[in-house]
Image 1: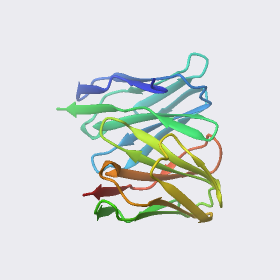
Image 2 (image 1 turned 45 degrees about the vertical axis):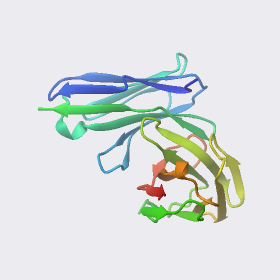
Image 3 (image 1 turned 90 degrees about the vertical axis):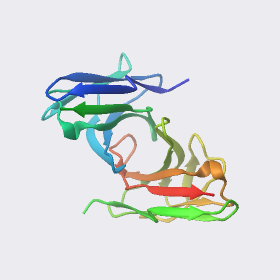
Image 4 (image 1 turned 60 degrees about the vertical axis):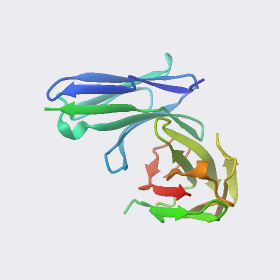
Length: 107
Length: 112
C-alpha cells in the first residue's frame, strides 16, 4: 500500500479562504518536507520539519511523528498558491513522496 | 549559489536508443537522488547515491543504472529506452540523511 498518503487528492478554494492538507505515513519518518510544484513543474521547498510546528507567512505545518502524520495549513488563500502540494517523509536516507494534492484557488 | 542543474531539460529518443541524463550540484552534498514523476503518481525513487561510487537501488530501479564518479555529478542511464520510460526525471541532492532535499528543474524524456 501507499507508504505516504495525501488527502485530499484535489481541492478548490476561493481566494481568501483557509484549508488544510494532510499527509499520513506508514513508515517511521524522522523528518517531513512539503513542496509546491508550480505550473512550470518546478519543486519549491516550503517546509522542512522535525517533529513540531513551523510557520511561514500564510502557511503553517505540523509534523506529529508519534501519530505518523503531517498537516499543511493555508490561510487566506491567494491565486498564486495554486499548484500541486507534495509531502515527503524521510526514514533514513530514503525519502518517499505522496501522490500530491492539486490545489486550485479561484477569484 | 545553491543549485542543482539537470541536462538536458527536454529529450526525445526512439525506442531502443541509449539515454544519458546528467545532474550537477554545487553544494558539495554527499547524497543525491534520481526520481521520476508520472501523472497522478507523485515522485518515485529510482536510485540513491550516498557518495562517489556508492549507489543503492530505490523503489523502481529496473531499466536504469547510475554513475557517480565525482561528488558533484550524478548520471542516470537508460540502456535501450522503452516507451514506458517516458516521464519527467528529477534529480535532488541533500547534505545528509533526512536533511532538506534540493531539486533540479527536471528533465522531460519522451521515448517514441
